[in-house]
Each structure stands twice: as structure tokens, then as C-alpha cells.
Image (cartoon, rainbow, N blue to C red; front, side, top):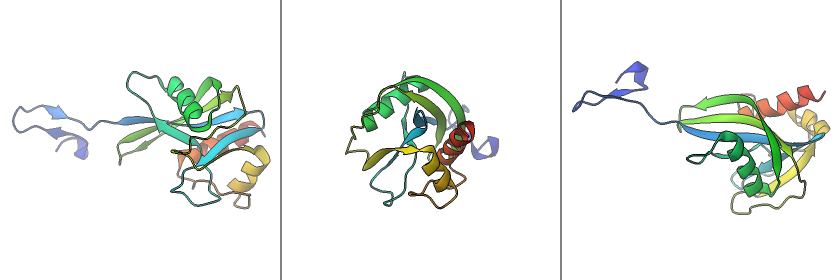
Length: 156
């Protein structure tokens, strides 16, 4: 074990090995004063969060953002901007938080991945972040909440 447990030395060859980190994009598609939020079936009714998905091999994160939004919600997006990142040591993921400019607005849900996807207004996001909205949002430690807070602050 080396580097505080983040690496290992092979007893056979002496090489240092480090665990892989899988990149995941998490994003808000933005349409004026609305953002796209969704919920997978494993989450409770009334809970909404940013859409997310793994970056595929050979794919840049901007293309992954566009692909995931298109696959999960049927929304076309253009410009993608980086906001923040968050490491998750288990399961070895790096969440890459982004905003994406919506080029279309008609939702077509991928029912195998998502149970609910909808546009929500800035005012509803403000209320949800305060704990009294028409839906609940992720806790303060989650990058999905950071994305919502950043978007709300930028549009205030």
C-alpha cells in the first residue's frame, strides 16, 4: 500500500498501481429561466436532480453532456460550460458539473433510465433549495445541488 492507500505496489514486479477514476458528467440543461431536472425510479416521488451519466471512452465531456441529455430526455443542446467537479472515492468516480444551452424543449423520456424529467422554473428551484418547494432536491454535499445553487445565483 502506498500514497495513503490510493496506490499499491505489485509484489511481483514492484510497479506502483493506482485505481482508475471513471468520469461522470452531471448537468443542467438551461432554457431561459428554466432548467431540466429528472428522477430515476430508485428515488422517491417528488425528488428531482440534475441528469447525469458516464463519459464513454474517447468522448470529451462536452459531447457526453449533449449525448446524455439527448438520450435521457430527448433535448438537443448546444454550448456546454464547466461549473464544478466533485470526486467520489467510492465508486471511484469524478463528477464533472456543467450547464448546457437547450436548443429544443420538447421532452421525450428514456423510460429505461428515467421515470420523470421536466422543466422547472427558477422560482420553483429557489423554493426547493429553501426546503419549501414543489419538489425536493439533493442535499448540500451533492454537486447536483451546487449546480442548482450556482444557476439560481447567476440568474438572480
